[in-house]
Image (tube, rainbow, N blue to C red; front, side, top):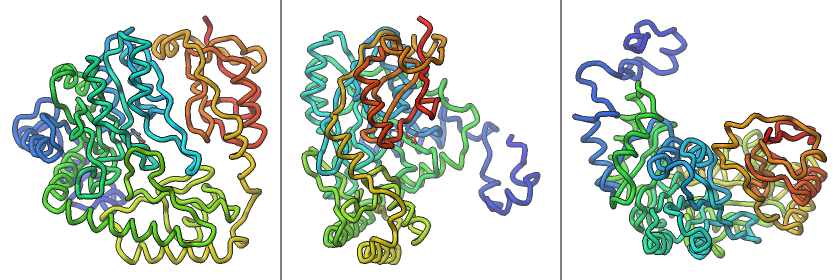
Length: 463
Ligand SMILES: Cc1ncc(COP(=O)(O)O)c(C=O)c1O
């Protein structure tokens, strides 16, 4: 294994794409190659160095992204029927973790930032409120940093959770660089989290899918965590991914402070530039507890250009690929990998867009739909009838919306914005939720998760 035998049998296109060296390094599961599931030699040493670098008692290398780390954390710390507090807008890997573990979610609301039009990280007070309502909860699974750069007060959250006897699992997919230099947020581990996942591939130099899972403190069963990872990860891990994690760790340990200080400086320069551009806004820290300033979230709505359009203009006209966009914002991410020239090109592009906005407007503006989303507010969370796991294993039936009112939903329905699941599988569909979705659909807000794109039918559970 693999069948290409060090690249000798690989087709020419693959050889061309990967290069000989990469194919020669693509070996796994032979004598003298260590095993991530039972590390004894160099993988063990590399993981120990990572634990030291990231301030953990133990670190595991992940080859299936933070996705499998989130799932493993829930599986390790919860039994079927046990309760867990997590933000309603948690990443979908945690929804899968709920299905795998059989845990019952108690959803926390996140504060909405009107200026930026995004949800911030969840607050300790909301988590504590839920803990009082559901005193048997023993785990808080918290998104430490949102994709827009807003960070939770993890110290306060960890202190409060621990005083209630609950463990804190941090989804810090967007924060593998946290703590690398002054001016960046502190990592969740440094603030007392029991476990944390970080996507080294998102912001450090690791290859796609390569992530980290950190552990400390003894509140989570370390053996079960390891067991869950054995179940969720491949038995043929890619050494290219593992080596990239080790090298990304080394780069961070040896040069991280310098590299990230420079990146932060460039990000600050970019922020100042964009906020001085007519028609552009840059998201500031605002009400967030802390903010990752290397994420430069910009909006050109005042020019009549929505976020999705702006991303397209930057990509297709100016050959600059942003990280992501929504109806309002474009998220730009500054890392040590960009050069001065990259940022100069980006600035020139933004300047050109600002100077001649009418060249770019391809469709009706989205200010009206966005205003509507704000005016409507977000309806309360629906009644949960079945747990995510019970819902997953129940048969579904597609029915017209009007017949679905009062029934139990079989789909995860999330309008963007606000990007928060409105109805999850296993929750009751109420008339108010249908009316809300109808309004959003009428003004063209995308509704994710609905199999019927015409908004005529919805899947309900046969209960
Ligand atoms: C908050 C959050 N958590 C987890 C993940 C999953 O991370 P990965 O892509 O490393 O599996 C993402 C992916 O974007 C994310 O945004």
